[in-house]
Amino acid sequence: MHPRRLYAVEQEGRIRYFVNGRLRGTFLDIRSRVVSGGEQGLLGLAFHPNYARNRRFYVNYTDRRGDTNVVEYRSNGTRA
Image (tube, rainbow, N blue to C red):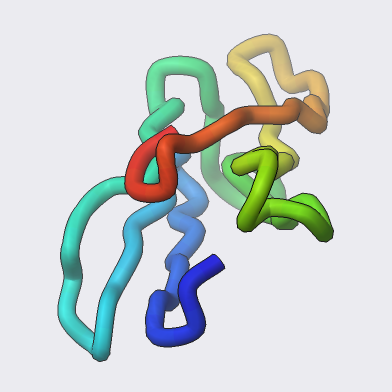
């Protein structure tokens, strides 16, 4: 993780990132897999303790069938 980078998790299924307070892009977009509304959607993001080296992170979301998923992704440092 970058200390000046802020990640915003959107319930609809997208994670956007900001650098020094400015929107810089989309980190992850899984809107096609997510159902959102009420207590459903993209619900959480957690970075692996060694993210700086292995670029692994995890998201918790509700899929189109209504099932909860916790999935591991990798990034290139900017996008998943």
